[in-house]
Image 1 (cartoon, rainbow, N blue to C red):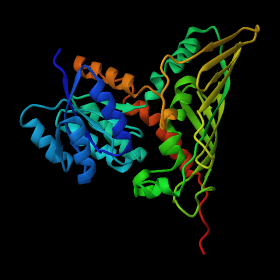
Image 2 (image 1 turned 45 degrees about the horizontal axis):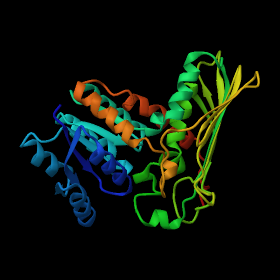
Image 3 (image 1 turned 180 degrees about the vertical axis):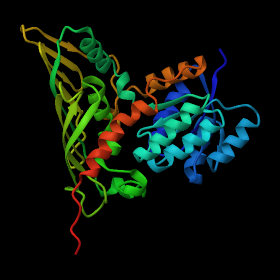
Length: 341
């Protein structure tokens, strides 16, 4: 099979993870990188032994003229996701977008419409759905042995300081990041929670800036009560996230079912009501400074490439990604506003 010709737009922190996966993928060839920052662009081009371009239009023009482009990975700041992905789709190039799908629901819905009309494939990078422990939990819930879900909780307690925001001026701002801890860190856990428990139909809660109030515009802490499913048969969950902890701890999801108590963190523990306790440990564990991100970017990217090669719609597309984005937007719509002076 001919390898897919792949390019990356945006050569910041998360692009390094994508470049690792692309360079390791048997079914892909890196043919270009793009970034407005000349130093980052040059470093990525040297690492991938490929061409570098100053903007997406130049990259599409240069590579499509020779027929040498099939997929673009969008790894830019959030507010650029929808426009850049739409530009690729309009020219028949498939796109894998880093989370979130867009920095606002309106932009995400617009991108979903563009993708629906395109012959190309759109995917969104919620790689934690590919963690083997997460997939095992999904299998157990679908199999029926655990019984009906009665309730759930999820928690993300991470650390971000002023230096983290100073290193990238788009972070911590509503106009460019679209939000704070919910949008930029905890969205993966929120995505898993609604994937396990079901689509969220009601959002109650609050967001606040507690640890970094003198540094960022957006929230660093959120506490939510979510309702999943129809009003006549709802399942409730609670969700807590903060960037005000002293370290990055593994996200936790707990689910209470009719017949068991389930906990997903670094591994999966199922405590059955009959006394049995099952523990499922991940086959692959990430290491290094970014280990708490998980180890499944490569698995998602490989699967996305298989869908592109087969001309099939990817299962984590814009409508799927909009589920968590709508929850976040609802939380922001209820956020406290400062009093006029």
